[in-house]
Image (cartoon, rainbow, N blue to C red; front, side, top):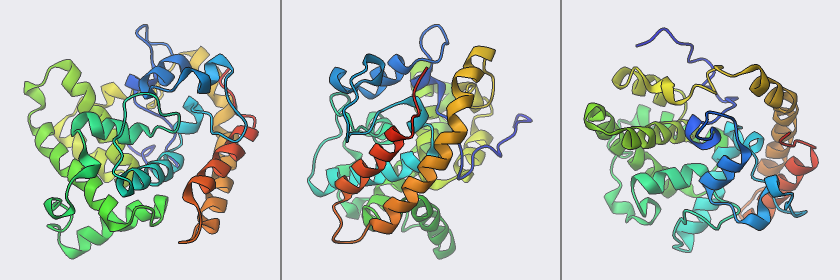
Length: 267
């Protein structure tokens, strides 16, 4: 394994893989991020199209691990319950993790729960650790079924990483994204174990690892700290207000509005 610092991959991790935030010239790009998520034009912050009451899909917002975890679980729980497909474009509330999983295993969230055996195959101690890591960020949204669906992706990923040397660059990029998406939900052990199989994994996370230009540093340093404070408060409010009788969509939209009103913008 390379001599690299993995300590940034923690509960407060801030960043995203290069694939979704850097354009073809290697520049940090809000437009490229919107294209990656397939955000409809009328909801794109880069076009000044944000609407009050809806969240703004900016790099700053999605760079927060805590936000991505609760957003993933809330949105996918609805898609599982209503048996809705995860679409590659046209959804202004798109979850990056959900889309990455769907590129890796199409329809992963609509599987029969009986076929998802990876989580139940763990010993009790390991199973509790996985579940507690997930719930520490996302609460109980989606229940045990959603944890099982997501962990099945992680188990499938392990075999794919074993075959890394046989993959073309496009496949490797996807696998690096899946690793990162699994880290969002299941914590830093995902990164540590993946690095043992793929020592060059961090080549796909150069921006997050700090290999930024002075211009990049200036563009994000002013918003990162402020957003973490606002997002933390908003997430706490969302958790406290959530119950079985709470409309989870309304709860999340309230969260998005707080994030938007924080003044975090992409300059």
